[in-house]
Amino acid sequence: MKNVLDYLSKFVFVFTIIFFFYGFMQFPDSPIRLCGENQYCGKQGQSHTVEDFERYKRYGTINIISFPISFFLLFINNRNKKVAE
Image (cartoon, rainbow, N blue to C red; front, top):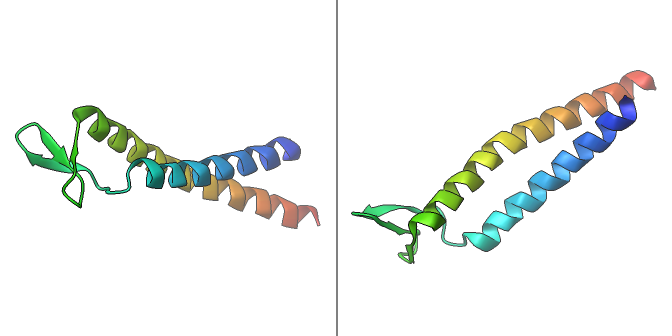
């Protein structure tokens, strides 16, 4: 069980970091927001489609969920290692 938790925590942490940097590459002008009737733009004024906006929202939601889970799993894994010593 400890090996599973160890691998799971590392996998989730690596996924979280990679996904975070994926967002920097995909959305360099984030946040994407509504800037007119059915128009979306980034902070530098570039126009975006509704699909871009929806992808950005999904990206933000996944980040909000994955970061706490990642740190919680790493905390539990680290705690289990200290107890085992």
